[in-house]
Length: 355
Image (cartoon, rainbow, N blue to C red; front, side):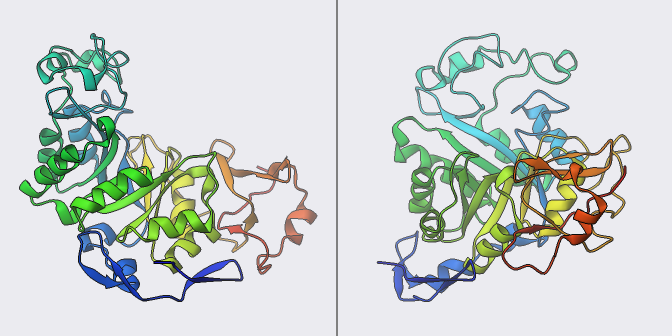
């Protein structure tokens, strides 16, 4: 099917609602695909925080310790990465090899589960407090998410040759724990098409890296997956992108954001999910974090361009704009910015002069 669309004022409008084949092989309309998100994925409505590889700023990454710490800290979702072993087990580890994070060596796909379990995690945050940690089985990770009520966020990364049997096994385990309609998978377009071929309930998101342009064709391909969205590097985030995706019926996640002021500014833009490494940015801010004081929205002024970083010590927003930083703007230049200019992409963030 060829999807027809109109690009009007840089926003996307779908005009073709003819019958299409849904991910589970049944027929439906494009409208059916666009807006049927499981309630667990859309509640609360914006700014849900996801712990990247568990809470790995406080515990060794992708371990039982980091998953449990993230759940206790109040993160909405817990992200992990999965690979298959030589003998068909699914395990949680970021890299394709065990070398960086354990005392072992070798590629996960070429090792049996017994060989993987012979490796001990020997690096990561507060590693001395957590001796003897092993690479978890996928079932252990899902079990922890189920126990604490967290949403599993699964990056499908190391499935050798994209063998469909491992996708089926992953979904079978998710179903066994009753988590299929409160689960998200992220990965390449090809990987997400394979997930969709075995489950219509899992929310899928296509990863968009920093160097990848977000084109209308890219978004259309993601839309065709149904119950879908994009997982973008934070430098892609703009009010325009979020509005465009929401108009199409796509959800938006960004990674990896570790600054409280950045997280609050993205929430102001209406982003759906925010992936973070940082302790205390789940449901509440820890005592060691600077408390957000609402300053990003008080003056109702908007800055054009995409935020690259926020200097919280100086409490000012810094962004690239035509090759110079906003910090160099004079008061006159700042006051001249027009928040009603429809031709400029605006971010909801206040530029604090003189601090």
